[in-house]
Length: 254
Image 1 (cartoon, rainbow, N blue to C red):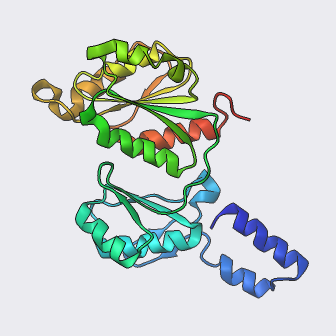
Image 2 (cartoon, rainbow, N blue to C red; image 1 turned 180 degrees about the vertical axis):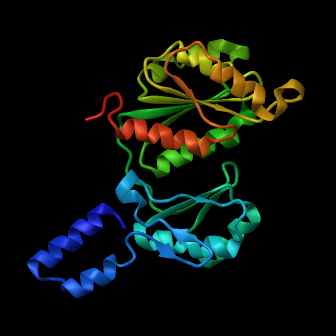
């Protein structure tokens, strides 16, 4: 349940427009909802500023339908990550308002909050092959109500492409740097900007790249200050960290 809805309900009780019994009934499911196969944390938006996001892998399409519908009823929006096209079709048939993005594998319901001009996040993607992870980060940030500037295919093999976007980078409240191979992009950006940089190593690469381990180790070993790193291919996790930074008072906030 959104904080605004609870405040409105309490004001209605205070003015006598809603009885205490009716308000109690609406608040009964506030902490969580038990669906037998899933316990939905309906209290999360009150605690953390955003509703629970569903990890789609490992859940059936039918389970996703029930979970997303309940979250949508409580928050007027819902998001699931790592959703296959087959499961997305099941959800779309049951919930026609659902929107699926094949590239990011995100499935969303409801309207995104209107984004403020500042602070904004930059999601910088080293190569086109990293786009699925970059879009998971970008669209999650937009779902959470943030403006996103996308920098695509700006890896270190052609550094002039990144330097051409230096103004956009330096005005950002936070930068999410998505890179596979050797993962050098994150250190380069970390040395160019004053805001926090979140590195996302991807599994793009071959041989000694070991499914993203080389990029992960390189980012963790970065000598650029202000760099933090999330797990391999974890665009969603990077977006949540970036959102927390901006909601906590990033650059240009106010």
